[in-house]
Image (cartoon, rainbow, N blue to C red):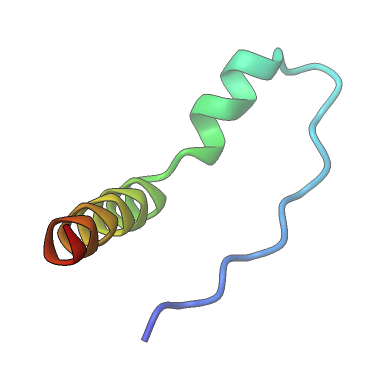
Length: 48
């Protein structure tokens, strides 16, 4: 099962948005995004 994502903390005013985005993008979230992309591509290939 996929673990539920923790609620995002409010961005710190001292951090630039770019740096905050880099901090939020964890390897686990990257893997989940890749898995979702592969699944959508696979389902598109099957239906096509």
